[in-house]
Amino acid sequence: MNKNTDDKEKQKELNNKNRTYYSARNVGFGLFNKMITIILSFVSRTIFIHVLSIDYLGINGLFADVLTMLSLADLGFGTAMSYSFYKPLAENDEKRLAALITFYKKIYNFIALAVAVIGLTLVPFIDAIVNVDTEIPHLKLYYLIGLANTVVSYLFAYKSSIINADQKNYIVVKYSVWIRVANTVTQTIVLYITHNYLCYLAINVVATIANNLLISYKADTTYPFIKNNVELSKEEKSGIFSNMKSVFLYKIATVVMSGTDNIIISIMVGTAAVGLYSNYYTITTNHLGSVTSILFGSLTASVGNLIVKEKHEKRFEVFKLMQMVSFLISGFFVVSLYFLADDFIVMWIGKEYVLNNVTLITILMNFYLLVTFQPLWSFREASGLYQKIKYMLVATAIVNLIGSILLGKYFGLPGILGATVIAKLSTYFWYEPSLLYKNFFERKVRGYYIGHLVNCLMIILCIIIVNGIMPSLAEITIINWLIKAVICGSVVCLVYGMCYFKTKEFKIIIAKVRTMLKMKD
Image (cartoon, rainbow, N blue to C red; front, side, top):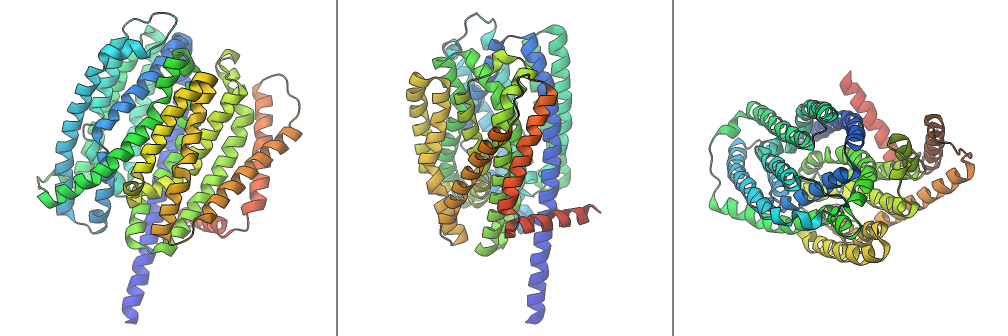
C-alpha cells in the first residue's frame, strides 16, 4: 500500500517536472523567436512605409483580415485536433495517434481546396472593400497571392499539431524562426531594391511552403508511426465531427471578432486609417500581445496534460499563478504604452502617423483584455470548454459587429475599436470564468472579478502617479523616451511589488524560476 502511494507520488512529481521543463523550453524558444521577429518586423515595416505609400500599408492589413475570415473554412478543426491529441499522447497510444493523423490529413487537404474556392469567389468584391484616394494597380493580383499563401499554410498543418500537443512547441518555433529571418531579410532587400509589392508578397508564399516542409519532416522523424495508414472507426470520426460542430461556432465568433475591424475601418473611415491603426496594432497586439500569447500559449499543452492527470486543487493553483502573471504583464505594458506609444511612433516613422488620445485609450483597453484573458483562453483550449461557451462567443461577435457599425458611424475609428471592448465585457467576460470555476476548479468565481477590479485600479493609480512625477520633456528624443520608460517601469514595479510580493503565487513563481535554472545547469 505504501509502495503504491510512493510510486504515485513519484509519478506525480515526474509529471510536474516534465510540465515545467517543456513549458520552460516552449516559452524560451517562443520568446527568442518573438524578439527576432520584432526586430526584423520594425526594420521591414520602416522600409515598407518609406518605399510604399500608407495605402499599401492599409491594403496589407485589410487583406490580412479578409484572409483571416477565410480561415472559417477549417470549421475549427485546428482546435479540435489539438484537443484530441492530449489523451492518446498521455497514454502513449501510437495506433490512435496514427489514425488521427491519417484522418486529419484528408480533412486538411479538403480544407485547402475549400479555402482556394471560397477565396476565388471573393475576387470580384475586392474593389468594393478597398477605399483609397488614389488608384492602386494590380489589387486583385495582390489578393490572389495572399490567398495562395493562406492555402499552402494548411498543407502539413496537422503534423505541427501533434508536436505542439506533445508539449514540444519549441521544435516548431526553432524551424519557424530561421525561416522567418530568411523571409523578412529577403523581403526587405527585394522591396528596397525593386520597390515591387508583388515580389514582396510572393516571397511569403515560398517561405510558408519551406516552413511547412521542414516541420513535416521533423514530425515524421520524431513520430515515425504517424506515417502508418490507420483508419479511425466510424464512431470515433462521428465523435470528432460532433466536437467539431461546437468548435465551428467558437471559430466563427473568434474570426469575426478578430477579422472584421480592419474591413469596417476601411469601408467606414478609409483604407489609409487601417494603415495608421496597423502601426499601433503592430506594437500592441502583434508584438507585445504576441509575447504574452507565446508565454501562455506555450503552456496550453501542459495545461491539457494537467487537466488529464490532476485534480481541481492543482488546476486552480496553476490558473491563479497564470492569472497573476497576466496582471503583472498587463500593468507594465498598459502604463508604459500610455506614455510611450505616441513618442515611439514619432521617432519611428513621423508625427503624421500618430493617432489621437481617445483612440490610443481604446487600443489599450483592447490590449488589456487580450493580455488578462490569456490564462482563461489557455484553459479553454486545453479543457474543451469552447463546447460550452460557443453560443456566448457568437453573441460576442454579433454585439461587436453591430456595435462597430453603429459606433463607427458616430465616432469613427475609436468607436469601432471601443465596440470590441464593449462586446467582450458584456458577454464572455462574466460568463466563461463562471463555467471554468464551476466545472474545473469547483470554486466560486467572485475572486476572479475582484482580481480584475483591483488590477484596473492599480493601473489607473500607476498612470496618475507617473503623470504627476513625469518631468516636462517637450522634445521627443531617444534619451527623453528612455527617461520616461524608466519612470513608468519603476512606478509599476513599485506599486505592483507592494501588492504582490508576499502572495503565494509570487513565491511559486520564484520557485519555478529556480527549478528552471537548475534544469539548465
